[in-house]
Image 1 (cartoon, one colour):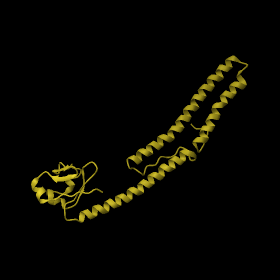
Image 2 (image 1 turned 120 degrees about the horizontal axis):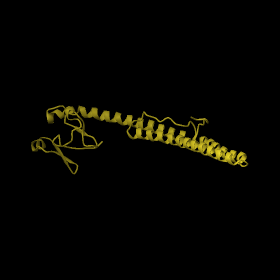
Image 3 (image 1 turned 60 degrees about the vertical axis):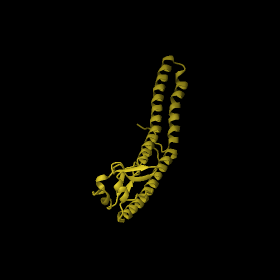
Image 4 (image 1 turned 60 degrees about the horizontal axis):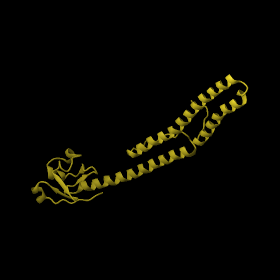
Amino acid sequence: MTWIKTNSLEAYLRWSICLLLIPLFLVIVFVMPNHWFFWLIITLAFVISYWRINCIVDKASSAFKRASLHIDAITLEDYNQHAKAVFKQGQVAEFHQQLSALSENLQANKARYDQHVFLVYQLIEQLESPIMVFNNKQQLSFANAAFYQLYQQPWQLFRHASPELLNLSVDNNHWQFKDQNKNKQWQIRQSHF
């Protein structure tokens, strides 16, 4: 439950600190003459202060938890998820705006990269020689139709296959077939993109 509507972390903390000082002021003004009333006010001030401190911590930490979720989404290359800012103004709001701008920028870069990769794949598909593309985990991610000349099966059946499953070996970035007949029949060249 929020009693004070603020748009920035700074304003929220200022109001919260002021509210924490009110019980102390009340203790000084009203409690001095009466001993039992003094302990009642102190207890009440402690409970209210504890509650407000928890509210402050929850409000401040929720901004960073949301930002953390946004960063996790960026890490997983999900640039469409944006964290809603807890505050509409101030440093926290600016931070969330920067995260959103970063997501949009990365999304645009990824779209351009995907277009380039798609173009490369289209060019590879038109070549008559067998071409295989392995991802960074050394798994087959794409091959052209000429792959059939090597394995007499469409490459899609071997998607995510390791080089070993394709009877290939790599030694010092030099690829070769484990089958000597294929080594004599085919010459392997490699490149990175």
